[in-house]
Every structure is written in structure tokens, then in C-alpha cells.
Image (cartoon, rainbow, N blue to C red; front, side, top):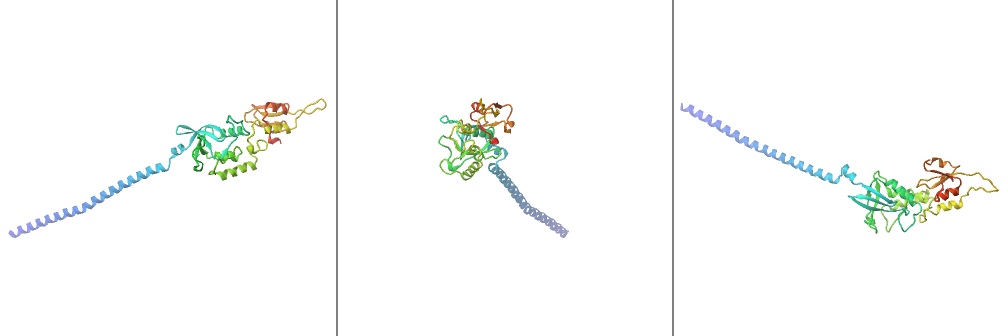
Length: 292
């Protein structure tokens, strides 16, 4: 009987030992799992923070569509071909465009120069009501001596306004003091306009000399050199009708035999019985190149 009790005690002790070993083993296994879970949570949290930081940096460095639109400024008004006013951060700023010089139209000390009205009209046509992107040039400084911001201007559709005005003959290339960023390109553009007799380079307009008054020069040359149809008592000649447009920017006249007048708007079409009568009413008109 005593022997059996000893066996039972031994079994109980063995069971207790096995249970204790199992508990201890469980603790040893569970601890690394918990620690591993903590490591995973920390890593996940760190990655989340890093991702958020990157997103913030990207928003600052890579502007979204709205920020790109905000990079454009509104044109408030066009002063003349080389000077405009824009709205920057709620303030009206006057820009003097780098590298170009258009004939004078607004300086009270000077008469309106040859091709000045045409250049101003083209500037208004290109920029009025538009948005533009401004590019500064460190070589030229920030402001000119009149306090105007010096800049190149790109229209919202990408048109490089400064270059366009030179290449199409609405402006001279202009170097104020030292070479500017696009000087080489602008000089090449001016040669193109000269070679093709565009705008102010046309021999029928200013022939490159815009210092003359807009009301003199080319029109007077036409008057002096163009034969005038007359009727005398000894000689009867066929009377010729001459046409022009009364529209403000018009500059040509057309004899009846030249079909160019037929394309003029009937709203502004004017006819005269003689060239003298036409030039008396519109002294700045010159013969259309179509009719030469």
C-alpha cells in the first residue's frame, strides 16, 4: 500500500513538473512574438510617417494644376508695344519688356512715330485680357531707371511675345547696356523681318526708320510720286474711283482697277472720285502692295 502511494506521488510530481515546463516554454515562445509584433507596428508607423512627409515635400516641389495656373498673371492693360501692366499678388505692376523697342505712341514729349500705332494695336490684340508668364533676366537687373519691372513675357498658350514682335516687324531688337539672355535669337529675328520687309521694315512704311512722324514720310512720298488722274479743258481722261477703309488701323488705298478694295468691310468702305480727294480726307493712306 505504501508503495502504491509513492507511485501516485511520483506521478503527481511528474505531472506538476510537465505543467511547469509547459508554462515556462509558453512564456519563452510568446515573448518574441510580442516583441516581433511591436517591431512590425513601429516599422509600419515609421513608413506611414515617411510617406506623409514625402507627400508634403512633393506638394511643395511639384505644383498641382491649380498652382500652375497661379503661376500666370493677368494683363491689366497694354501701354504700348513694349510696356504692359499686369496684376501680381493683387498689385498692378508695370513691365518693361526686355530686348525690344517699339515706335513711340504715348510719350508726350514725342510725336506718334512711324508704325507706332500698328505696333500698339498688335500688342493689344495679342495680350489684352490674356494671362501671361513672366521671366526675369538676372543679367539686366530687376527694375529699369523708371522703376518698371524688366521681364520677358510668354502668353498662356506659349507665345513668346518679345520675340514675336521683333520677328514680325513690330519692334526693333534693343540692347540697353549689356547683352541679355536672348540677344542672339532676337538679332536673328530682326534680320528675318528686315530680309522679308515685314512691318516697320517695309519700304512702303518706315523702311526701318521709325523716328519719323506717323503723319509724315511714307504718305507724302506716295503723294509726290503717284500720278494723279485729272480732267482738263483740252484733254478728257477716264475718271478713276479710289477706295479705302475708314477703320482706325487701315493704312492702304486701292484704285478701282485693283481688286483689293473688294475685300474691305462695306461698313467702313469709302470711295473717292480722285486720289487727291482721298488723300485730303486720309493723308496717311498709301497704295496697297497688292496694287503695285
